[in-house]
Length: 360
Image (cartoon, rainbow, N blue to C red):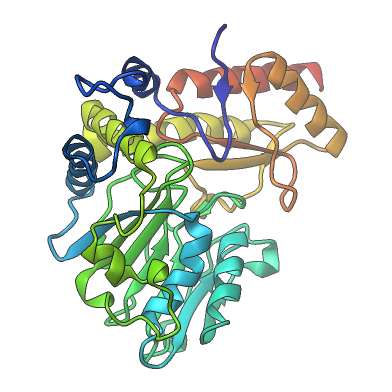
């Protein structure tokens, strides 16, 4: 069976070398006599896997020594609660730039524990751009400042991050982590679900600056306390062991590709191939403002819902799958994460050209 080009927003395409490596070790990992899935997370052999994953991520992102790396569960949704539970320590207030579905969910969660000050929003145009935030509206006493760095559904991203001064900047980077070079030191905390650029669903990465841990509200359950997970090195309970193993393989693969500099160059090239055609097309049009367009998630439309549906069905027959856009935006969406090869984007563009010629 021939593999398809999978444009799913997540769970998403994984690098083929990673899948083949995992397949070769599925029945028995090295000479352990068992699969990674069967190992105790307390065993020496698994500890080596975990240490490799942690070191691999720290190396790729050049994570400073005063930051902890956690491999947790619960996805970004659980982080929507963990962030305010742990960081609402003084004013119980945060600033937020509202850019779509995921900041809406984070806002709703945070408001259960404190006050959310929306300093800028792009809701007026269905979140198709990143709004400019006026520093005069920032709260000097905010416990943190919250953003979603890349909006999977709306197809927008921050080209420049806001300068929040002494207020810790918190970023949901679920759909773009490891896609570009990043200065981690600009952030107080970064979190990301694995199922876009890191591995299979089930692992959530948290990178947190040391001084932000240890201030959880008294109502915080132990499982939601960053300090507990830091103390136990992500093993307060049984972690998602196989997902962490897969993440370690992905980290190795990124390093073999040339690291984040090479990933960024390739991702910009892939996105340009698709955007350049969309911008020149008479049938297709993009939905995100040009200056804020994501290089990971690219939503686009034709002139009608009927034509969108026909395109999606026809594309699937060509091995171009999971192109249906989110209902809030409509049309199509091509998610072109790290593991999507350039060839996949070229095949998509060639099919779009053919489809346009047939529907003039």
